[in-house]
Image 1: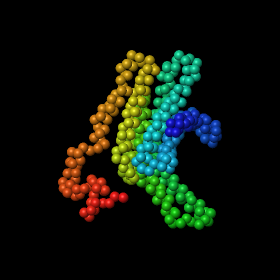
Image 2: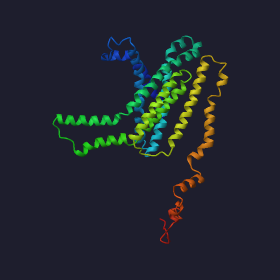
Image 3: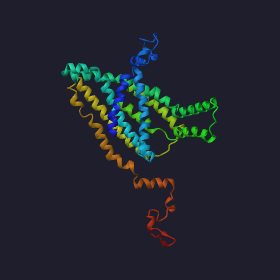
Image 4: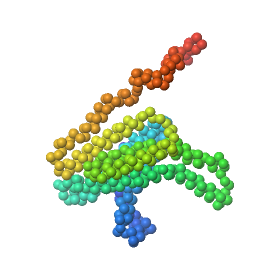
Length: 360
């Protein structure tokens, strides 16, 4: 079902590329037409460029909420940490599908007619058309850095619920309806505060970091300017997340470091995909002399992962006895005196008042 959803996810992503254009929207909705003074200026080009980007980012912001609701209400996942991890794994697959569909619909479609007319020029046309999408992804990274991050400080869910509550109260007063009970009127702000100020949206925050990392390493060789946009994104997002996680959100659960292993796998997969993109770009541009020297590139992240898993996977998941004893001695040198001799015994094997506990 998840893979079927990922396949159908290509439909709205492709439609955004087609329908979110100023000319098409102006034809459907005449009131969206720009003034004559703006037509043909840089402002029109900027609006035309950023309209599909902002629509895609808005769709990606809604997706984790939908996946979270499905896992919680339909599948019945009980643990908050399992719920967040499951949502993030699924959201990562949708992000990979989004990038693939965007590249194919935005780059290959430009040269599809030429490929059909001249099949022998397929590789050349792919090498020429795929880099065109780098401008779209550059605008995506800049929009995430300059718009999505700062807007998250407004806490839109809380703002919407508070505005809705105020509008309902004004409507009741205007229609001479009885006012809501005090407990009901206080329930809305408390519920909104619980949703927005309690647990942080870790899935959306961490997945945004992974998406920008994937875009940057994928197009680093094709469009090096995207690295500067990525650096700007990470600096601004660090400031936004530091402010939110220190002064706004209160964690509801502790995953015990489980998010790190998921982020580790996703980051290394992004590096592998970036290396494969580099090989494909060099091959498509007829760089056959350099290609043999670049073939080991995708194997380097895999080898690094195997080495890191062999060396650090075990110690990162559990403390050694020596380290545990050192930490206990640092906290309380006489800690062992507070433990009962049978603290690790099974309750059935313990004695109660000098008599064994009866089973059954």
